[in-house]
Image (cartoon, rainbow, N blue to C red; front, side, top):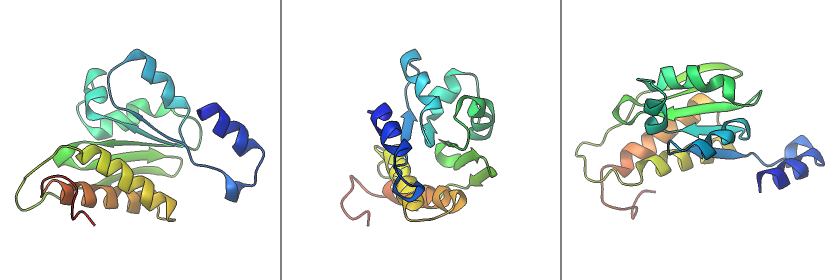
Length: 149
């Protein structure tokens, strides 16, 4: 599927190109090839730890050579917030924990979706990272997804 999007992107104007996002969530060898295919690459805390990184900052700095030129690499680290690295530098957002922690299931997917949403709506990588942390934090304050927006 990614190759079909790459072929499509090669034949359209920059405004019509589709942004490719990938997530390397589990420490599985076959997933690591995805690092080089995304315009926006999410790497999980679990994968980062598997490679010996002890923070999101270490992870994005350590993995950045694996992404394609111009890509952004993002790593969320739960209560520590999230970090990103791209052609325009290094970025950090603090976490935004809820007053009462209720349900963390799906917080990572919520973070990724919020970042993609923000980027798709013209926000900078810093703004997208912060928005992702805010929405993921909000999600952790209640059960499920009803009422997240």
